[in-house]
Each structure stands twice: as structure tokens, then as C-alpha cells.
Image (cartoon, rainbow, N blue to C red; front, side, top):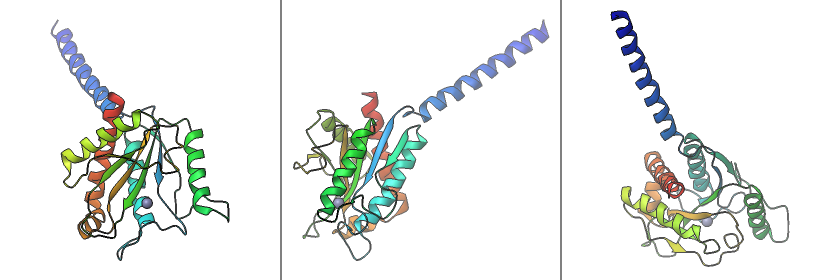
Length: 219
Ligand SMILES: [Zn+2]
């Protein structure tokens, strides 16, 4: 009887141990089965905004790689519109338009659940600063996603601007997949410019973006 009792106790703890493991895994892989297209803005001859410390296209790539890793670590399948310093254009006439057209085609034909475009803002006046999420009203889900990502960012980071409807920019009005454009700060503002180059700050930014995405899917 004592041996039976001991066996039951061992089995009970084994069960509790295994169950908590399963629970932890379910929490960890919160984006399991989801597919994302991460879109690092610009690339190649198109540098985007330029500062004395870095070019926008390079920071977009760094942040997009970190974002892709964070999504992947939470169980998602992730694609990138570019994975190096190049643009997608195959035309010599209107390279910019063709680059954007090819990004749209990739994302729309992917059957992914979401796209996230990463850019950095710039202004002639150095006073403008802050992270800002833009959405296109082509899909009603986009506004909710923008709100949830902004919420998540602003609850853990200072200097987050209110989310905003984008101005009918070619690429975003053509995308049939839910998503947003995130401007990760102003390259033209010394405070934003310094912060975005810090590894730890980049990690916090990316984690909060993904926390907002998680809330969207749990909504
Ligand atoms: Zn840009």
C-alpha cells in the first residue's frame, strides 16, 4: 500500500510537471500557425532617409531581422520582402514604383495573415520625434492593429505618437492582407537617432510590436 501511495505521489508530480511544461509551451508559441511578411523599407540604391550616423535602409533591415526573429520565436512562419541591401525592382524606367509593386505582389500572393512594414521617419525640422504606426483604411482590421501595437508600445516606451491613417501611399492602398507601417522614430531627431542605434532599445521596440500583434490575434 505504501509503495502504491508513493507511486501515486510520483505520478501526480510528474503530471503537474508535464502539464506546466505544456502550458509554458502554449504560451511561448502564441503565434503558432500564423504567417507574417516583414517588409524592410527601401534598399539598394534607395537609401531612404539619411543621417550622419546611418542610412534608413540599414536600420530598417536591422529592425526587420529582429522583428522576424521575435515572430519566429513565438511560433510564426516569417518571410521578408528583402533579406539584404537591394531593391526588388527589375525595371530601369520607374525603379521605385516597380520595387513597391513587387513587394505588394509578394505579400498579396503569400496568403500570410499579416504584413509589417518597417521604416524610419524624417523631417526638415529636427524637433519632430517619436515612434508612429500608420494604417491604410483599405481593410478595417488595419486600424485595430495600429491601435493595439501603439497601445503596447506606449505602455512600455516613452515617445510614442498616436497612430494615424496613411495618406493613400501607393503600396499600402494595394495590400489585401492586414498590416501596418511602423515608423520607428525620426532619423532627423538626435534623441530618436541615438536611441534606435541601441541594441537593448531595438529589442524592447520589437517585443512590444509583437505583443501588440499577439493582442490583435487574441482579440
Ligand atoms: Zn522610409
